[in-house]
Length: 320
Ligand code: RIB
Image 1 (cartoon, rainbow, N blue to C red):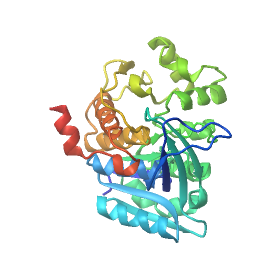
Image 2: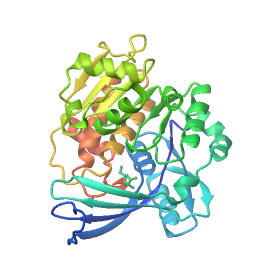
Image 3: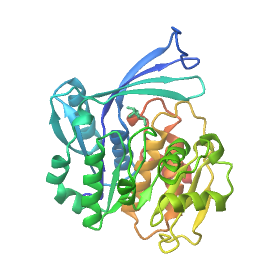
Image 4: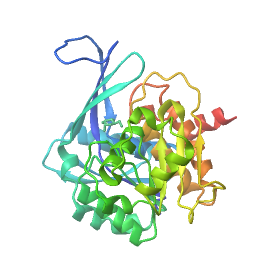
């Protein structure tokens, strides 16, 4: 039985560490590195390192990038099931500045060919999981197929609505039991689906009741976790389903760490969140968020995306 199924993207990341992010027209120097990434793969590696038996459903090209994904998954004990694509394996071009902030360009490649039919063929694997996690670097119809199959089977569905510019529909959002946007994604979803305009930079400063009201409009029947970077996270539950929590809405503060690279921090949070939900479904939701918060913070102390994910023992040491 797979506790967690992650449905999503794999990218070969090409990373330049620079003093400042490049501006239009500029040529600047940076230190280059390459490694595995893609929001789906990062989240799947986070989930398996956070202690959940994890399966990753993705599409790979028949090239060196695809071989890298298979090899690294095997090293981490991640079950990777790939749809073969005639497109090249996905790529990400990432600039990281001296503060650890990044700018990312994606070449979707094979990720854009991940098909609903492939996901439907993996119906049994999805139905035997406790939690299904998806993001939006795969075709919307494919993400919808995965969430719908999980919902039919009674599997808890978590949708990380990233990146912010990916297309979404109300139908897709409603298939999520838990929605996990960051401030930018939250603002984009509110503008698109609720008709509310909020500046991403102002989200964290909103008072709890106002944020809760916006979350309720966005996903009336589900839980919304707005990740707020260095400020932590805001959690909003539907009144009728508080997932073991005492309050319908609350904040959890960020952990204090020396961040050197925030690439994949949101992925670390999502992977750790679903791993904790799958491993201990009876614990209050706040416990899962606290674990995910710490896991994500630790991932920023290392350079890279998938390979920067901590392992469970490191998190436990920090908890004390
Ligand atoms: O969330 C970080 C990830 O976004 C990177 O690994 C990159 O590949 C993009 O998918």
